[in-house]
Image 1 (cartoon, rainbow, N blue to C red):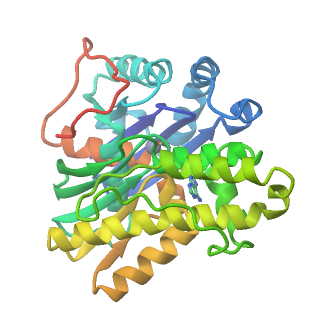
Image 2: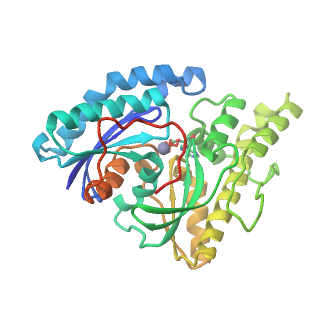
Length: 334
Ligand code: KG4
Ligand code: ZN
């Protein structure tokens, strides 16, 4: 089945053509970072307007690069939620009209299920069941994945998401938006042991997260070192990153042990973090586990992952209809 995937939940307009949920024929991502950067975060109204401008050229580019004719498409998958309502509505309404015009089935899919499915676009997908850490700008959770469409939530953040903590700390340090990539780069030159920021394990045997405490600790450090903190940016970045990575790695390795899974996956924007990737590879090797981490272009928001999960619904005959609507908040996965 050839599926067109469409993603517009946040600050990327993306379209991709994917075959059978595994093979990417094209994946186009138009980022809005330059538009939101001056504000230090996403401005929802600007995001929706930019999606409206970008959606048609991005879809056309995806079809052209895939080198297919429109009548070869078997269906369309689009992000239905969670995300910014105005942004989601652009992709969702576009899909309704496009699928109607092409007379093909379409389905709304959950963005988080999309992120989890990104590992199936790689050459070494994990066998079921496996555990996955999903860490992005809006979400941080651990799932026990039983099939392509069956996910058991083991734990999630009680406050900020991991990516959100990276973004907020970067903003406090005056480094720009989005903060994850900037801190990752800066941390290379810093000493991760220099400052002992708190690790919030909450309950060491459970899988919930909390990142608001570390954000406050970094803020306090800045307030207490008003004159000197600017000379210590790389040490602060490295020490903060190390604290977050310690908690994420500990919890996902423990989740694998609890469920007796040999395979673990790390997905979402934060999975692009170099230190996290390095630590997960090392710790899985130490514990005789196998790590599956998507390539960088599949960690951040993209439409290939949406086409991948959409395939598993459309191929079973599950589709959406014109009365369906988008949703903003996280809902329990199927
Ligand atoms: O998955 P994603 O593109 O969008 C959401 O669904 O939220 O994730 C974006 C998040 C941002 O918070 C960004 O700062 C973070 O992923 N991120 C990173 C890195 N690259 C992106 N965090 C840590 N290290 C990185 N290299
Ligand atoms: Zn995402």
